[in-house]
Length: 383
Ligand SMILES: *Cc1c(COP(=O)(O)O)cnc(C)c1O
Image 1: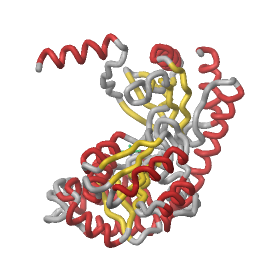
Image 2: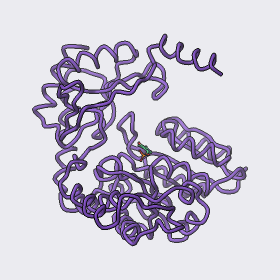
Image 3: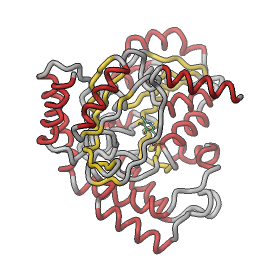
Image 4: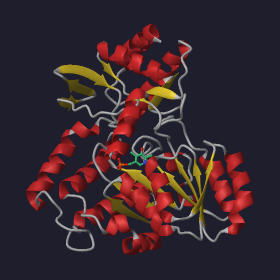
């Protein structure tokens, strides 16, 4: 055992892939502080800057005063408060689905939901770039699974034609905004295929919730396909500036999950403060659409500026990845930017495929055009 661990750590170090934790001193409105110095933070998922919103902070304090700090038990025991149900009703309305069920994290939602709805008589088709929590859910289900090339619906259809008939139930899974590429799933075509081949479809809106769609509910809303998508998962932990996740679905699936989903049943309910913050956050999404408009406008500006410099930039969303290919080049650029006060963490294998290491710029509401112009100039000087 000791030997295996040492070898693993030595190999990771040799390949320049050893990960270490870097605690920040503090965080404030788009900035992060390390060793007493301020850096513009391009690595957070606080897309709308809500984690420091006064309304959210007040909601956390009020709920803690009223209900205490912990929820003290699982939802099925005495951990279930009326505010959990209020949040589920508001989430269902927000996502325009019949019902919603709250989960403690997106990771727990994906692993729990997929594995409780599907089993070894079934098959699952998932995009090759799906998040680790989706992959783990698929593995846990025991279903046969087939990975289609990223956003390649022709490849998906070839697999469906060949495999679908051999199994009982079937599921197609995709993220709607991809976390490492910042691009969008071809939802319309995926829905057409799910109907043609009699599958269910599950979408992960972790990076789309709060940002896309007229009401900020996500890509399903933006594409006008909410009614045709069976399972819409999303999180409160990114643009909503809080913590936790949800599935929006039919009332019947919700009841089924309450009775069968192990990550829902065997985990303590989210604390009252978190639930109250999530409720407040949904209100802010409704009341302050300017945040998402500004974010997307600035993301477009940044991407255009990088493209003008002929830099290999991916995607279309608030996630702006700059592909630097080798891990070494990525580290060098990341360090150079850090010296100038910009913090963008390198994304390397195994998170992304070998040879596609990148600097991933996660934009937030606080990254003004002025800041983006300055960072573009620094990138230009160092690639
Ligand atoms: C972050 C993320 C998750 C996990 O959500 P947590 O609430 O952080 O556990 C799931 N899916 C995708 C696509 C994500 O980016």
